[in-house]
Amino acid sequence: MDFNVSADPPQVVEFRKEVSAWIAEQMRGHEHLRWSASWSTREDEEEYRFRRGLAQKLGAKGWLFPMFPKEYGGAGLTIDHQLVLETELFKFGLNLSHVFYTLARIVAPVLIRWGTEEQKREFLPPITRAEICVWQVLTEPHGGSDLANVQTKAIRDGNEYVVNGQKVMVGHHLPPDYLWTIVCTNPQGKRHENLAWLHIPANLPGIEIQHMYMMMGIKNSVFFDNVRVPAKYLIGGENNGWKVANTHLELEHGGDGRIGMDPLIERVVEYCRSTHIGGKPILEDPRARELVADMMIDLNTLRRFNQRNYWHRFTKKPHPYGGPQQRYFQRMMRLRNGERLQSLMGADALVQDLSVHEVVDFEYAVRTGPGQLHGGGTLDTDRLIFARRLGLGRPTKETAPETH
Ligand SMILES: Cc1cc2nc3c(=O)[nH]c(=O)nc-3n(C[C@H](O)[C@H](O)[C@H](O)COP(=O)(O)OP(=O)(O)OC[C@H]3O[C@@H](n4cnc5c(N)ncnc54)[C@H](O)[C@@H]3O)c2cc1C
Image (cartoon, rainbow, N blue to C red; front, top):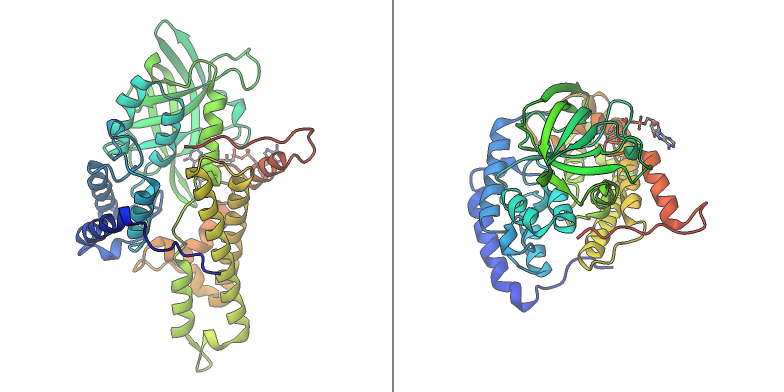
């Protein structure tokens, strides 16, 4: 079966030429900085500055969010144009949604869905033009899986919310401009109806950020001490935070989809071809071939899940269980791949190789396999949502939220 996207429709043939030439020009001399990631455990300044600059140049043309209306910092283009941008960027290993380390890929569509017209006009352009960096700030010290139970309070006082509490395991090593966060507005209120979503400027008095040094790199604790947040930063209306959370979480939990493929396998094949054991390349060993083939099958399966979810998203027909299915598969696959790498390479798979990007570094793959089982909600969360969307153990099936 040929899964490749067929020839471009006539309206984008010229656009592909333009994009292809433009990206090649931007990447000239920076080819070693290929591959996307939402944050880096290596804190490489050169890479960050290049990627941030590239995001800003894409943003200035409206190409970072090409389908968004021009007044919100997009280019008012079609899905065909977006696919051109995705596929041309992917030739350099970059995903449109992860050009630099920000959660804009989730925040911007949620703002489109839940923001007022005034909020969209004010908050979206700096995000879609990559002028600012936003962190998602959800998890709290008592536990992240049960997000509806957040304890950070935001109590209304006139035209402001007074925020007190603590979030953990958020962001990366560089400071944020905004904190995109869920808070409890009514501690005595009914579960799911006592929450709000705030887009908080990170420089407000009373906010303190401390690094947390984790196996997966730097994350942070954020402390809110009587932070006065103007009510204009409330997204989705008072006590409506759980609905906003649903859109946000569906995008985070696989519902956004993706076009590109994980680049790791190319390097694994290359390693197994060029590394010899007993005078023969590893790849000639039948057991090694089987492991490499299993990795390829898993990575291709994941790619199909990603593409399917991408398609459902842009046709505005959310796949009922596509998000958690993709996410569960992806996380288990990463764990399996870490184990396969150790079987193939032994101790080599535990030694960092700083000459390659971390997303194709075997040590990074082995180290992050277990850590990524937990990030963005645990495997149990995936299973639970998957089951509910299938209607298992409940009289009605849950539907997937529209993600835009
Ligand atoms: C690499 C990484 C990056 C992260 N980045 C961010 C970020 O940018 N922003 C952010 O807000 N958070 C972030 N997090 C935090 C992440 O979202 C939480 O770790 C996650 O939601 C799980 O919460 P927890 O760690 O408190 O575990 P808990 O929720 O306390 O879970 C502990 C254990 O209990 C199990 N469990 C919990 N509830 C149930 C249940 N109902 N049924 C069965 N079992 C259950 C879990 O499966 C798990 O095994 C990140 C975490 C990691 C590891």
